[in-house]
Amino acid sequence: MTVKNIVKNICMNKKARHEYHLEDTYEAGIALTGTEVKSLRAGRANLVDSFARVENGEMLLYNMHISPYEQGNRFNHEPKRTRKLLMHKFEIMRLFGKVKEKGYALIPTKAYFNKDGRVKIEIALAKGKKTFDKRQDLAARDARREIDRAFKERQR
Image (cartoon, rainbow, N blue to C red; front, side, top):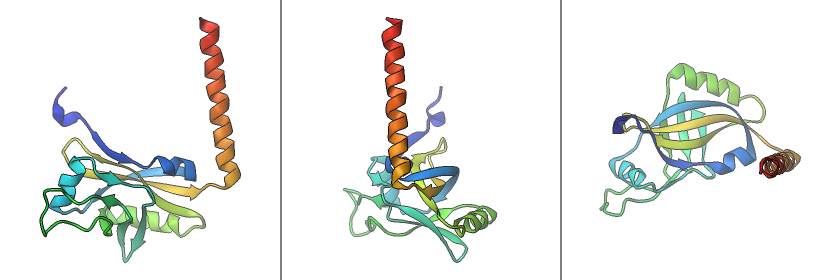
């Protein structure tokens, strides 16, 4: 196995699975500056509270925090600047049509380096969960855990 085939995760938005029903996922490139890439290689990024939006035929990512690069000088980047996501025009327009429907949002779930060393963002088409949905998911997860525990005890 060569080093080129390994995909390196930078960060994940674990809160997204709790807050939203994730329906479809899409891969998008992201336009970055040099110091942002160096900071991402050090794993200094956060996707919590970030979202994507289609404006003027372009997809933009808001509130993704990339910490300033420690060895950066006056050319260092702004941590929460708006970044352009790179997707095909027909994909952007399809997502724009779906987001116009009631309740849908574009939420980034994961940032990673692909096998070519490029930064990619996984965007999910998501619908917000209600409070009772969140409670229901927690109850189902607890029940699954109890069942697994009982099976493990029985196999001993």
